[in-house]
Image (cartoon, rainbow, N blue to C red; front, side, top):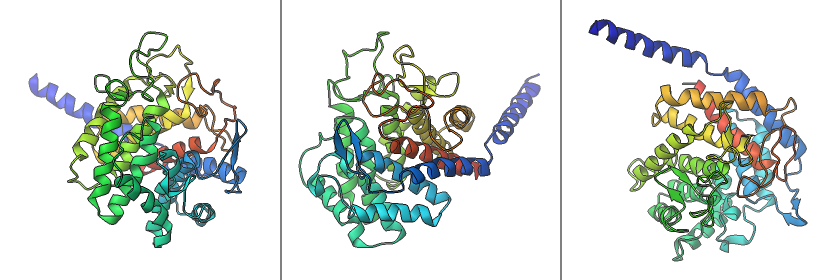
Amino acid sequence: MKQKAIVSVIIAFFCLGTLQAQNLPDRKETLKTLVKVNDYFMKKYKDYRTPSYVNNVIRPSNIWTRGVYYEGLMALYSIYPRDDYYQYAIDWANYHEWGFRNGTTTRNADDYCAGQTYIDLYNICPDPEKIRKTKATMDMLVNTPQVNDWWWVDAIQMGMPVFAKLGHLTGEQKYFDKMWDMYEYTRNTHGENGMYNPKEGLWWRDHDFDPPYKEPNGKNCYWSRGNGWVYAALVRVLNEIPANETHRTDYINDFLAMSKAIKACQREDGFWNVSLHDESNYGGKETSGTALFVYGMAWGVRQGLLDKNEYLPVLLKAWNAMVKEAVHENGFLGYVQGTGKEPKDSQPVTYDKVIDFEDFGAGCFLLAGSEIYKLEAE
C-alpha cells in the first residue's frame, strides 16, 4: 500500500507539471499582446518630447512615469528587438540630453529613475556621455551622508535599480553599499519602525501610513502598486548584483516573504485589489499592481526562487485575466489606477477610464509580459 501511495504521488506530481506547462500561453500570442499594447502607446505618444499637464503643472517626459514605461520598452526590446523601439528610446534620451528633471544634484528618485534606461542604452552602444549625468547623480548620493531619501516605497523602484545597474557596469562596490544603506533605512527606520512589516511581509506606502493608520476594516493599509514597486525593485536589483554581494540573501529573503504575502491576497478573478487587505476600501481589479506582481513571480519561478507548482498557477491566472479583461482591442490598457498613494486616489478605476499618466501602466504590463514570454521559452 505504501509503495502504491508513493507511485500515486509521483504520477500526480508529473501530471501537474505537464498540465501547467500546457497551460502556458502561446509565445506568439503573448508577443502579439505586448506589441499591441506598446504600439498603442507609441502611436498616441509619438512625440516623446510632449510633457504632461496635470493639475495645471507641467511635468516633463523624463520623470518617473515615463521612466517606468521605458523600463518596460527595454524589456520588450530584449525579447523582440525592433528598430523603432530602440529609436524611440534613443530619441527620448537624446532630447533630454541623458539627464534628469532638476539636474544632477537631485535627491528625488522620481527624477533619476530615467537612469535605468540610460544605462540599458549605454550597454547596447557604449558612449560615456550617455551615463555621465547618471553617474554624477549617483556619486553625489554616495558621497553625501543622507540615507533617508526614500520615504515613499515608489522611490525604491525608481532609485535602487540605478545603483545596482551602475555597480554592475562599473564594478564599484560603493554603489551596492549605498543602495543597501538607503534601502535598509527605509525598511527599518522610516515612520515608527520602518516601512516594511516583516510579520505580514508587506510594505506601507510611506512613513505616514505606519501604525496606527488603519483601513476601514481595521487592518493595516497595504497599497497594491506600492508593494508592486518594491517587488519589482527587488527583481531588478537581484538581476544586477553579484552572487556573492553582501546583502543578496537579505534581498532574496524579502522577495520570498513578499511573494507569500502577495499570493495570499489574490482575488478570485486573478487580479489584485488596490487595497491588499481590505477589499471593501475601493475594491476591484487593478492592472498596474497586478502586472508588477506577475513580473516578480514569473521572474522568481524562472530563477528557481519560487516553487513552480505553487506560483505558476497564481501568476498565469493573473496574466490571463489582464490579457482578457484589461487589454482593449486597440491596445489601450484598462483598470489602471492613476497616480496617487493610496486606494482612494484616482478613483474610480474602470475598464475605459483614461488616467492622468498612461505611461507607467503600460511599462508595468510590458515588464510582466516580457517575463511571461521568457518563462514560455524555458
